[in-house]
Image (cartoon, rainbow, N blue to C red; front, side):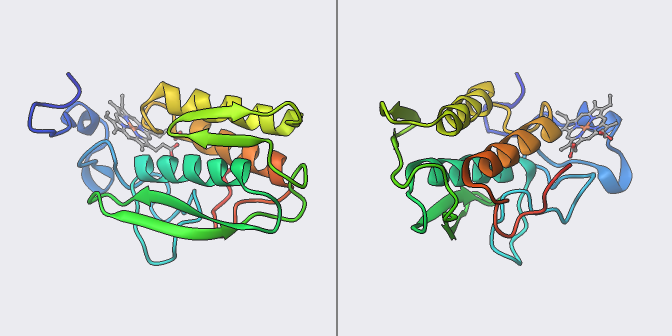
Length: 166
Ligand code: HEC
């Protein structure tokens, strides 16, 4: 078990390596390598853990997939205390296709016949990260870079306000 019945994460094994200033208190830890990085473009002044930021990246990518160019949509995530964090992003004018061919119901996308390659690729990468389920804890760099690049490929621009990871 990774967590006990009360929902406490088993982090003793993490802290065999992550001692001192980079100790982790739970799986949704503030990134010990980049504690101030804003991977998903969440509002300034909010501190979020790695898992919340990967949830945020999934929200932002879903927004870009299901919203037409020059429209705004609200990305929703939760902070490390489970409180909702939401913010509005404007989908860049360079987004592929004037009208989105993709809709989302829960965690299932429907892809219309006019969907572009970029839209299909972004849906694939969204499912890959969401389905893996660790939300960045098994491989933070992979999830962050993949979702940031999927947004860039889809829209032609980087996620507004985000720290772009190389
Ligand atoms: C065997 C030693 C070890 C264990 C056990 C370990 N880590 Fe790490 N962790 C590292 C090292 C080393 C890095 C830096 C990797 C790098 O430089 O890319 C790291 C990096 C991280 C990062 C930042 C990743 C990034 O690329 O931004 C997070 C988050 C993290 N660990 C969380 C955890 C959590 C949560 C656990 C327990 C489930 C854990 N780690 C267990 C050694 C460990």
